[in-house]
Image (tube, rainbow over the protein chains, first blue to last red):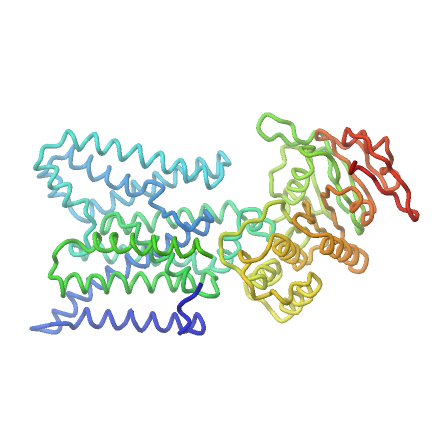
Length: 322
Length: 252
């Protein structure tokens, strides 16, 4: 099963990935740099910072989602986060018009997106999971329906848009790592950092939660509050990353499954760290190839989704064989 | 001491348990018997707080399951459920160590390792301790899950069909081990079991459920009569006493 026998323990894997990530970051910072170093480093440093933030948010949220649903081939996107994001953008454009939409400040739009997404999903989780006592699977199914609902509403509005408006919208909806606004990074870093604190505190409980509801309860975990807390963290992480660069949750599926493939002792400390490191390597490395070698032709997210899709099918085929 | 007072449970529109009352002294093995759908598994799940109670009260040594914090109960009660599926990739050793979680809270100590080693040996799992759960046979998996429950080292052990998937040899070994654990370590074991002869050979008490109610309860000798078995299972069997022990013949 494990081809990566060059690494004896998970510590070696983590060290190797950290070195690779550091190397890629240095390469990204210094490759082909001309002119003032101070400017180049701060300009590119901001970009790397953004990439690392997104990588961590997506890797962590996907692994946690797998843990509480006991299913490793779905992503939080199944809950309709992406669809809601598209719907928010579409309706903003439709009701405000092109001029107003473009003039909307980045921070305003960012906060609006996050508040709507987190509020809606926390409300849903609270109602279904805590109040109505439904299972996590019903919750995921409800998420799928909600996703379809918002997607169709968006399609309906698409038809009402004139071609100019539609072009503006399309530019907005493609996830882009180039146009991340720097003033949004600080607040994103704080939010993501705050989300990581409870995860660190729960790191051992996560291993138990992965055993399933009954076993977690039998082993003394307060199941509902813990899972609700994790759902809240996932909602916040996904919202932040989506509001920052657009929908790229498929990427999380890729890095989490690569982590499951190479980590030997699959406790959550190892899994989360390795998934984050793979995510950082992929994003920073991908952006480097895309920006410096290919000269910004196309979009990184398209490349990631394409290669990610192929890798994912390969992983599925391999896992099936055992 | 276990006290189950006036518990009822509705699943959907069906009343699965109807005013069940009993109390058990600490120690020994109690078998819950009854036909499919009689409410046995629901009763165990309620006792282990996996399902919320509709009404009534369950307590273990004066710890009310509805009011006591879950991590306190985890040292008091353990449960083996009927279906066990884990999506995470775990070795037998890791799984059994998770059973110690109520004690070590994620940081296994020397005592935990020693305890787990003892349980692995008892369950004849020491040779496959490093294998992954999903690569084991059904019977080996079942033994690993039982080992996980035993490593939790709780005073009360609830087992829902512990003999699932086990061959004759391992089924007997498990029952002998349970008997030993009950006698030597003064644990109370409550199990749901379908093979009436296995139940009779190793248990002290029977509680028979039918349609959500207790219809017969008592010592094995009291319950193992042709009349009682017909009442519980709606089928006629011959009960024969061989070497002082009662056996039910129901194969033909």
